[in-house]
Length: 356
Image (cartoon, rainbow, N blue to C red):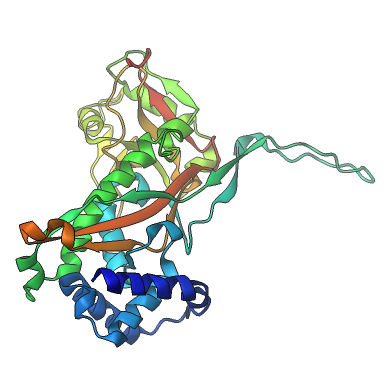
């Protein structure tokens, strides 16, 4: 099998550019289904059990998506990737309302960031020359940082059981690990470190409203956070509050000055659940209420961009766990994030300084 992997990599290196240029935007569903069947066979039995025609089909798919630093794996079919992406939604509330940018490769993109509320037009008199105003903006990069699922060990008995939907099983395991990992960095990523982390929401949001107490929040403070956002953003379809489940529990017990509950449950088909008439998302990576903690965010989350590379790579590790009669699988996912408008999202912070 090691020799087959070397042969496949040689094919990839020689045909990568040609295969990427030959991608058909109108994909044949029958071809996708066939590739899915071949991929399932590879997952269960490895490359040594594939015919030369089947190996060629996988090599072509692999040449379309493999990055130079991900040699030795196969690009997962679209059907497999769709299952992973769908199940990842369970692990990141912010990702469900952010703007998702899916790219075909991982090349770094330069991205302008600015405070949108600072840009205002001016009147111009007859025959007057239009003046110039330097917009204050920053430039940041939107890369494709690599995350691994860590090795998923599967018993060979399970792999050989044809009654098991192996694609769904592995997709669920990968989605759980990568989904939780991505969700963590989308919120808590520092934008620094080795390896470099994405610059998550916590580090990107600079506009804050502070509570009067370190470990408590009042409904008036949530209202103040809401109205610290420019009304133009509040009218956006992705205007939301965001906090974790512990904060939701606290809010659900609160009332406003007239004794009305802050939290209202959803009405199916009519209105989503809301706090102070603002829909919300739950993300468990957001901090609990505490001194110096950004425990609640509010704003137009369409201005928070998550970049995902379309291709996911899966490696099959046979020899490493042979003595346990197991096969290992290792998935690679590439993503990054950026807040393009710093005035679009703000945070509620507990009074005081966070303890180190």
